[in-house]
Image (tube, rainbow, N blue to C red; front, side):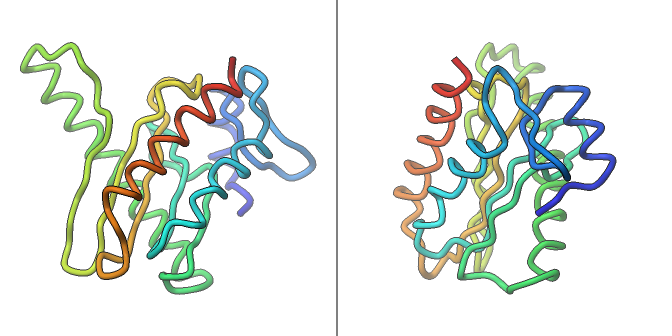
Length: 164
């Protein structure tokens, strides 16, 4: 999925890896191809509806992977944008809450369970970009939530090792 002009500007400003027309952007040596490849590992998650890499301040989607458990085409992509924006708000609220409580820890992940879906929001502190996170939507009836979380946790480590 190619990004909007606004998302490209944000990526350039923050040096976030993403796919752009005519080339790739890099952050600490992590190419957009590495990001796509790393997110592609999540394709094996049973019940995957979608997963996206999200810029934290604006909620813009920088990279998307649609799974086989969701609606194909544009409706799926529109849903991803809505999930990303909502996840960005949730992360900001949880960070405000933890700061108000005097907690020194940052958000690791947030899980929202609905009737048919699980939404997992996972921070990527090792990826080299402050606040970057992944938002994953899963079909609740088909997914092993613990296994999905484990696979998602490995993404941060994989991106972190490429940024080193």
